[in-house]
Amino acid sequence: MEEKLVKEVPKKSENLSQWYLEVIRRAELADYAPMKGMMVIRPSGYAIWENIQRLLDRRFKETGHVNAYFPLFIPESFLKKEAEHVEGFAPEVAWVTKGGSEELQEPLAVRPTSEAIICAMYSKWVRSWRDLPILINQWANVVRWEKVTRPFLRTTEFLWQEGHTVHATFEDAQEEVLRILNIYRDFIENDLAIKVYAGRKSDREKFAGALYTYTVEALMPDGKALQAGTSHNLGQNFSRAFEIRFEDKDQELKYAWQTSWGVSTRLIGATVMVHGDDDGLIIPPKVAPHQMVIVPIYKAKDKDEVLSKGENIFASLREKFRVVYDSREEYTPGWKFAEWEMRGVPLRIELGPRDIQKNQVVFVRRDTREKISVPMDSLVERAEEVLAQIQKDLFSRSEAFTLENTREAKNYQEMKEILEEKRGFVVAPWCGEEECELKVKEETKATIRLIPPEGENVEGEKCIVCGRPAKHVAYFARSY
Ligand SMILES: [Zn+2]
Image (cartoon, rainbow, N blue to C red; front, side, top):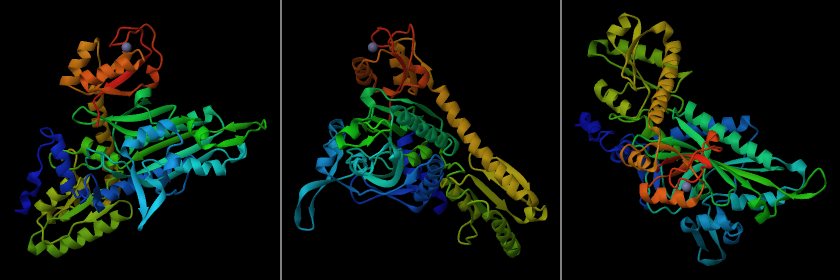
């Protein structure tokens, strides 16, 4: 009966959302908590998050950022200081009104994001141009009371990192915003092997309280876009609200310029959706909790020889790779193959008596099922090469899919048809008016996902909705 477990998972192409939930459950990435909308991240899911943290944290530190930690609670009056900010987040804030049996004099918000508490501290810390820039990141949890939830993609509490920086000039802040956007793109494409588009959000879609929001957007297999990370130029909105001022070199007192930026455990959801197949997860080697699994195959008479050779191989690989040696005797090799495929381990190493005779092992790629005979003496080098190839091929597949599903529409009718039938991104000129943006949303359920750098200036093009002169070229899509 255990052999059949894998078959419970529906086909990815037939029912993506059911497949997604089932794969997450079966691969033990997460489970539903008893409270509505909340999830438990299980060890297999958390290990992916730890790899994401490690790879991103290294990039943040290489660019001069440091980590700190701020309180989980934010006084109501702080949250209210920046008008747009509080308006944007009010519907999803959770409140603490009692401590023990005592009513609090002022309710405390459980942070939906930390601008308000961090800015309050920055107003104490920033005095002079010599104090700038401040480049702080924190790894934390946040709470947003969501009505509709889905593991990793949208949950009431989630894990993320949030960077909060302070600068002397607009230009410095803008440079930081784009530097981070580039880090996000580099990380998601190279380490998560997911193709993204990067660009600016429309005013309607920007972060509550920001001057500009920049985003990286990925395309999921059902043709819906997923916002994978955002980087905000906050301008002086928060520094004015929180009195973050510094004496500049010219001895004038000036309001500081700020940024904030974040990615979350949502990236795990994107990785699952983009790469997996009917047999389960496919985790890119750079973030896979286990990059390879060694499965010994033997009959009773060969058992000792195969198991001890397996130990040797395990020892030679474990210094360089995250490898697991599955020598459990209570499961058959066939069961193990299916189980580790479900869990998305990118490379399987099979070892049987005939392989030992030939002084080789057999590699089996999770993504293509390709079998490769590898001589024992080049095990480490070949493993490195094959993992790199898997990483590269996963990205190429995601990139090809995204490009195939990015279409230019000649007119509004065609745009509506694409968004209804094929989905994906539709690239079209836009006049910049919210009226047209809203009309598209009402009639097609698509929003402007981003305006790419090359779409900021257009000459002679007409808005796809109203026909007036276009100001931008925008990417429209339905989204998660
Ligand atoms: Zn228009």
